[in-house]
Image (cartoon, rainbow, N blue to C red; front, side, top):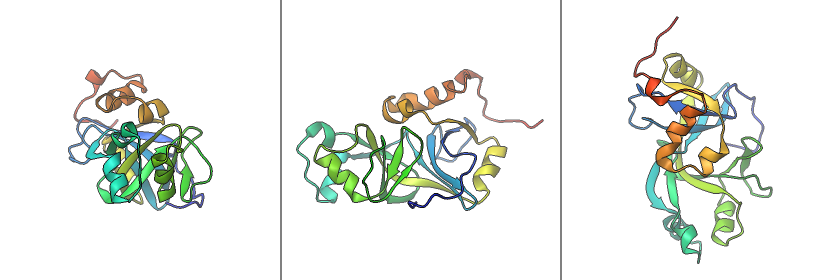
Length: 191
């Protein structure tokens, strides 16, 4: 990701909802925030999978001091199967971080250390979540998967990204489509 405004894709400002039939273990019942979609492909951050790490462990690894046990105990998400050693902070918009990209009026993503340092010092964004890794698709790959009924898309909802309990995020995202979860089937059809 870069600070350069790439050509916008039709999936910008969208969340991808994995359909029940998507059997890839990396994406089963996931909600993935699309951070960038253009002619080169797509990048997204999964927002409903726990990584097994907490923020305190990340701070220790980065040699950042944080005295706030509540902040240190916050879960870290598994953002996707690509570069699981890289951190992506989804947060409410704040200017001044080194490597940030605005997703919409409510969310930006920052990949630089300075945002984590600010969070550790109690001076970070109002709302945030850290994810390790990301989901990536080559040019045309995501579009093909969507035609194969692997994904649905819904506009980004910051309440899902920042507030909803992890086990409820997939259902809430489906609910934003106005669809009853019980009506989703494992296979899709084509007209």
